[in-house]
Image (cartoon, rainbow, N blue to C red; front, top):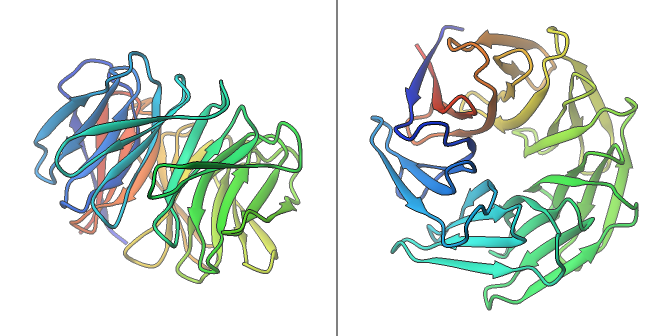
Length: 295
């Protein structure tokens, strides 16, 4: 497979791009935790920025809804933010202080689900704005990313307890221990095969868990790759960022892995999403957005 990687320098110096999502408007929306902004980039590289109302919010993960709204976590200030299609920002303060909201996604019924790293909870925002929280059974599990699964439940990684979690709409939680010790699961996505695929940042592996809880693991060829985010690509393979080895990885549902180097050294790639142009877009901590296309 032939691929091409391009990079787009962001106009504000050291803005800290981290999470990225595809908006309903066909643009790429991304967080800039150092600049305290939400960024928007068109596929031809035009960038605009929106300042956040709260100072030093620590904006990290971001997701787009079916309605076109952009939701994001404000990790440092204990809030969840919502940016409407008309450009209005609403912030929801979490009930418990210092919850450390991190991962965020839209649920099957349109509710917004998120993880609370410090609070050891899964949170949910209803359309009314009401916030519901569910405590996790294992203390200090450090829930990280979260995604809606093919079984109408939400699946999430538990970075410190070394588990994959599942929570139903009713709040029932099930956890699954990983075979590799101290694997440190982070990113997770719904795969093309109906299973959940995730990365092990410390275990240097890509994991797969079926909705019935069967786990498989695949070792990344490059040592200390430090995989971070993972998405299903337009080619029905899974694509992931490797910020430790400065590469973009690809794994088929059969477990075959290929890796592609990023042109900029020490780019620190984090979030990744499939863009409206069917390319893979990813955020680089070095103040760039990357685009991997098929040629």
